[in-house]
Image (cartoon, rainbow, N blue to C red; front, side, top):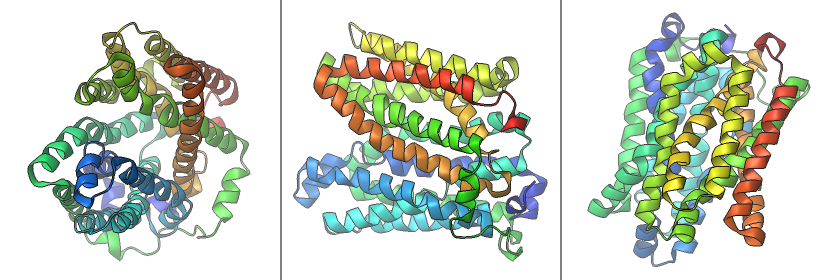
Length: 402
């Protein structure tokens, strides 16, 4: 166990006892990411602007979330992953609450950027802490349990925030997420006790770019970051965000109907969290990654060629399962590429995903403009298949080789 993983003696003695609270922290982070999906029209009406103008609120969360990983990872390694995570959750909850009193779009954009920057301290540091405290053989299954919170946020945030927004206004949705985040942070502190703050400095990691240079000097780390970037480009920024608009424009579904179909991804993801341990045990990491990537490609191909919306709904559920079969292996490997500075490694992994997402959305949009949804989804299907083959040849077969 690395020095950065000893922020709390209580946590080190029973690492899984705090896992449900870390999953709750992942849940409130996921809520922040998806909170605005049904609220943009309400915010636009309240502030007297167009929906196109308030769409900047989505980007204003995502960009700081990704860019601040450069700082948050070394902070976690230097001062303790759970310390920085708890501070991040508490401040994130406070910033969410302050968003509810924003009087102008400019104020809300600035506060939304602050919530993104603070929210970036939660998921990567939680995974890095799991890497410190859980043996590698059990790590992917443990991460899958942590991911349950994020998956549930994908399923519940849209319907709940939409209902709250309809009942009491969009400000109520921000207050709800802020309160949940604050309670989660307090719960982690109570679970770990005063030792979370009384312990000395957790590690000797530097706050500059020394640990990033150390990471980039390792060939396996460079390959993994490149794979994460392409993963983000092909899926996070490429295929996944456009399935809803494909259903609306291609099959003339109402937005709420398209939302229900897209939510199927969360059901498949939830299935993965129940099956992860058995899948890893029976298949091993590389075969699990290859199978997940190959089936992802088939599912995207089926969506591209679907004759009706019902033929999109079934692959959409399977996408959640196949994606985490592929992506889960990458997450587990990321916890091991720099064991002496895991928070830096996980933050770099997260930043690569977000940068890839930005590039992928542009590339997918270009394909969409030139050949329609079918060509764009076919491009993503071919890309993820090639990426899986590259992982098969490029990633070490055993974690000891990472």
